[in-house]
Length: 402
Figure 1 (cartoon, rainbow, N blue to C red):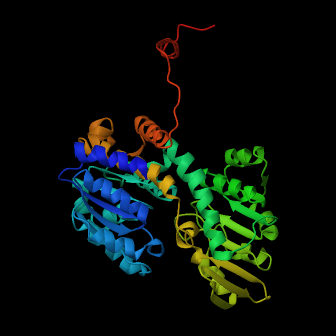
Figure 2 (cartoon, rainbow, N blue to C red):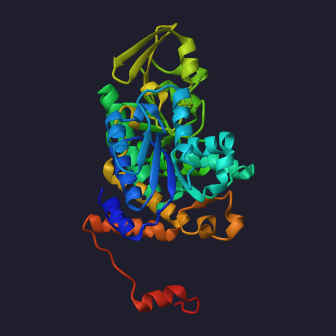
Figure 3 (cartoon, helix red, strand yellow):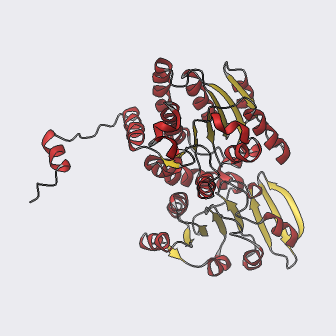
């Protein structure tokens, strides 16, 4: 992860987080460990909880817990109550900054630990699902500090969502099923940055891809890229593999289960385990065979059809696979680390117009995107052109034309 390595050296010299406490709720993986070390190099005390118990790597959690300036509250496979207990424990330290993945940390801070919000300078959010929750909080007037949403980062949408998630979701599915994707009909629900990447990777493996959407602009984009676009009700009877990537809930529910063909595989690429209604599927089943393969459970319905649910309906690339590749997380975490440093510099006022920024959901500043992209290109040994003075003058002027 060379970009974080370069930032770590800068942070060690500049100490942007000196004396500050950062509470994090992230997937506890080796890539996250590199991020945490980058933050501590900048002077932070970091307290980490897991954003998904099934993605937690216990060996990484133990190694991080031994690091100076770090505490870890995470264990693989814990139940819901323990998951939230861990979040409360990291909040006990009274954070100055927060880093979230799914908004559970920020939500818990506002709902249950509101007395701590006054000292929080700001935070970052990694996921589309978490950003959607933050925007609803902001509209309701409930969000009490500025949060930068990395999912709207230009580099994040390209590298993280489209190419990283696109590849890692298919990787998780292949590990869980060992299926041949070529020739299969794959239904991708949602054609945002993640869904479009998944659809492209599935097509690249030889699948016949159908896209379902509720957004007419995205649906048109899918159509113009050569994908078949259908309503879910028309796509489901054709599906051999369904991948949900919408950020919404009940994308696959009772009606959809009734129409799926025998042997259909179901995978969720969204952050929360609500896109596939697992409770409804269990209620329909007359028999459930757990672990027919690792991370693959067979649900037998009354009419004899078998539906294969992958990763318990949780985010498949992190449960059945290793998540986005390290090179992808290098850029994603670099954006978030720089966003926190940006917020740490004079708190909410650094985000724009003083008190008016409190409770705002902020996009990643362009200069942060540009810096991370430049560092990434440099790490890859790639050079690009620069504008001449004349070109810059022309582009900045409205007086010159043909």
